[in-house]
Structure formats: structure tokens, C-alpha cells
Amino acid sequence: MLTIEHLTKSYGTKELFTDVSAFIEKGDRIGLIGVNGTGKSTFLKTIAGLDSASSGVIQHPKAYDIVYLHQEPELCQDVTVLDEIYQGHSPIMQTMRAYEKALSRLEQHATDKEAQTDLMKAQEKMEEHGAWEANTVAKTILTKLGITTFHKTIKELSGGQQKRIALAKALIQPADLLLLDEPTNHLDNNTIEWLETYLSTYDGALLIVTHDRYFLNRVTNRIYELDKGNLYTYDGNYELFLEKKAEREALERQDELKHRNTLKRELAWLRRGPRARSTKQKAHVERVHELQEKTFDTNVENVSFEAASARLGKQVIELKGVSKSYHDQRIVTAFDFLLVPHDRLGIIGPNGAGKTTLLNMMAKRIKPDEGDIHIGETVRIGYYTQGDEELDGNVKVIDYIKEVAEVVTTKNGQVITAEQMLERFLFSRSEQWTYIRRLSGGEKRRLYLLKILMTEPNVLFLDEPTNDLDRQTLSALEDYLEHFPGVVATVSHDRYFLDRVVHHLLVFEGKGHISHFYGNYHDYLNEQQSINTEHEKVQMTSNQTQKKSQSQSSQSKKLSYKEQKEWETIEEDITELESAIELLQQEISDAGSDLEKVQEKYEQQQSKEKELDEKYERWEELSIRMEQAKKK
View (tube, rainbow, N blue to C red):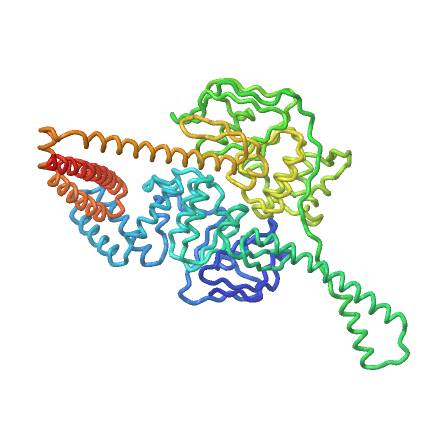
């Protein structure tokens, strides 16, 4: 168990959390939530020992390993993927690191006897520490996260790939407690679903900061909430948290009301002016003073936004025969599509498929190789991108927003100042004079979102808008989009967001092909599952019919001369195939982490096993016909 006692953390005059206490046990799956800027990442860093608390203690056993995945991880750029993920001081990580180095050296100098000896020693160490399984698991995790180039250096990979390598590194390291800060960022939907399954069987405890509400609901069994410096604990997943939080806030409002009524009665008693003075009456007076000093903070902070958008005509955006390639890889092929008023479009597909490229072409940020894109004359695009490179850290929050507008006008004609808009987005008047560089990652994203919406767009392009935004901001954005009179096109891996916002989908299916689906993401998943189930039924029926036909046909005929010869040798063939499969299994074991060799031998094994199955079926068929021939 890890215990947190009376933990307090301040940055200057800003107190993130005050006198908080909690505990984490083996098997815990804890989600940590709160508004951006409340200190969630700082809380994780403090537990990991990467930041110090102002006061309080964190205690755990000496042999207690904590692994932390940073929201913006920094990796050594000059090492290979495998060198990076096998970093660590545990014996098993050191053993795997030594084995990979020995294997790499032997691959470069195949005839070097010293290299051969080193590899043999490394293999013995792998056997001694039981590291073969861990090695296989490590490479499986990398593959599932879309990393298959194990011997490339980190600097050769994209930013998204590097973040997935950091996640793989965190999952692979042996840990009693795994701290994950926004692990689903930069993962596609299929990979997130795999991660949910993987974490359900994770040996250690988990403490996760994430905006993904479906992920929270499926992975966690407890929720920690940081709210106005306090830490509240709830048993259950995200869905139960929402219920219990509403109950807690209702009780707090009831307590505040009771407190007001009690204070009102006590003050009335004082005003009556009791005739006698006594110790009891002095205690009564002191109680009134205590009641007056007690405060309640029952104001619920919610992000809110309402602004008008520019008028949008009938013509929005039309794509005709659009094609785009990068490095001989086809991203989009002869694509036709029409965005019309009030559209709510989601764009989904694997990482690197070209989703952002499509948005950039529609925004005229990049040109297609072929085809035309026509944008209507009244279209005013607001483009929320993945990065926050547009935010200058040396600019103050209020000045950044005033660059767009001093005031905005809502649909109802109400005029709201930039200061008031920032307050609606949870930036207090004092925080508005803070430099952007002092904001948390989530606060920067919230500020950037406000700037985009204040431009009064009538077409919104959102590229992964849910990354790093807290649930309050996401809920406000979803509510805003629900009443937004213009067009929305979003690239997102957030399944809840897609279900709430979009009405139809563009699905990247590979090799430049994009399909169009009417419905939200949940509808799409249901249809895909239905298609797969139907395909399996058809395949099963086809196989059964084929076997039955073959059986009936074979039973009606005697063995030919060729089949007689086949019958005489078939048992010997089966024995040879079984021996060959055993040999391949041994070769796979000996290959260790030589993935190419393992893959080659595994494919050969599968081929032999298929051939063996066919031989067994053929033996059974010939055997039946031999018996029938004898009876005749």
C-alpha cells in the first residue's frame, strides 16, 4: 500500500491542493479527474518523486516501484526503440537490454566468435531471469501500439510514434504503481480498446489522468477528484462517480442551508440581549462567532460559452476527384464529398491514415495532388489544431484573447467583454494577467479553444479537440456544438465525443479509400460487429456444406489406384509433419527476440499445421471409404 498524508502543494500564491490524504492498494484502478490547472499532473509527479510537496508525506514499502508516463514525454533521440523501452534498473530489464545488444552485435558480425559467446551468455541470463516471456510481451505491446520498426532511432520517428513508445516503455517496466498522464492521446480507437483490455489484467495498481470518459468508465474502480484544493474519493467507475458527486454537492448545499438557519437563530438570540451574564452565555456567543467564520464553497465552476456565428450560405465545401499521396503512399484517392449546412461530420481511422491531411486540404492549408476543392463565399473557418504552437508564452492571457476581439455579441444580442468571456472559461480576473507560459497544458488548450470560438466561425474544423481538455470543458464544448448553427467536421478518437456530436462519419480504410457512414461512432461499431458476425456465419455454413459434399461424394466411390498409393503413405506423411512442427517450435524458442526469424518460423509452423489438419481430414475420409469397400 502507498499512503498519502496531509499533502499540500503551492506554486507562488496559487495553492493546488491542501492537506489531502489518500491511499492506493494493489489492484486499485483509480481515475484522477478535475478542471485543468487544479494540479492533476503535479499530483502524479509528487507521488512519483519528481516534484516535492510543500508539506505532508508519501509512504510506501522500500521495495516499491513506481513508473510514471509524462503527458509530454522526453525520449533520448539517438538510441533505438528497443534501447529506449528496455531502460530501467530492474534485473529483468537489464537482462533484456544486454540480450538485445548482444543480438544486434552478432547480426552485424555474424562470424565474430566473441559476439557469438556474448549472445550465448545473454541467452543463458534470459533463461535464468525468465525474461523470454517478458521480451515477447514487450514486442507485442509495441506492435499493438503501431511500432514495428524496433531498430530505428527515436529521432527517425514522428511525434505521435514517440509518445506511443513512451507508453509502451511505461507498460513494459515492472511496477507496483503505474501513473499514466493522458495515455489515450495519439491513440486511435482500436488501440484504445486494446489498452483497456490490457490494463484490466495489469498486475500493479493504476492511477490515471484521462479525458476519455468511456475509458474511465471501463478501466477504473475508484475515482479521485481534485476540486478547489480538496481531494474527494469515490468508489466505482466514472458513471458511479457522476451520481455520487451530484449527491455530495446536494448534501453540501443542504449543510450550507442548515448553517445559515442556525446562524440566523443564534444572531436573533444575541440581539435580544440576555439580562444575565454567565459562562454558558459566553460559550453561546463564542459559538455564534464560530458559525460566522465558517464558510462554504458550493459554487460549481462550469465552463460556459455563447456567441453568434457569421451567416452561412447554401454552399459550404465541395471536394471533386481529390487525391493526395505522401512518399509514394496513397492517402486519398479520387474522393468526392459535399459538406452542407448543419453537417456534423466525424473523421476516423488508424493513426497516419491521412485524417488531418484531409482537414488541411478542406481548409486550403495544403493542396491536393489532383482534383478541386471549392469553398463557399460565406464560409468562415475556425480551425482548432492538435498543437498549441500558436500560443506565445510571453503574452498575457487577456492580451492573447483581445487580439481576436475586445467584445463578442451573443445570439441574443448580449455584448460580453473579453474579460467576461475568460471568466466563463474559468480564468479569474487575476489569472487573466498571467503569462501563457505559466498555464498548464490543459489550460493552454482551453484558452486556445476560446480564441477559436471567439472568431465567430460558421464552419468549425476540430482536430483531436478532446486531447488535454478536462471533462467540464468537453461538456461545455459538446453543448455549444449541439446549438452551433454552422458546420462541424472533427477528427477524434474520443468515442463519447463522437457519439455526442457527429451524425455521420468518413472512415479511412487504407490505400486511399474513404467510406461514408450515416450515424455516430456507436452505430458504426454495431454495424461492423453485425457484418463480422454475418461473415463468420456465412463462412461456417460454407465450410460445413463443403465438408458434407466432399463426404457424400467420397462415400459413393471406391479408392482409385492413386488413392490406394496415397493411403499407403499417409500415416508416414502425418508423422513427418508432426516432427517438422516440433522442430519449428524449438527453432522459434531458440530465436529468442529475433523477431524476423520468429515471424518466419511461425509462418512456416502455421503452414505445416494447416497441412497436418488437411492430412488428418484426408486420412479420416480414406479410412471410411476403405471400411466401406471391405464391407462390400
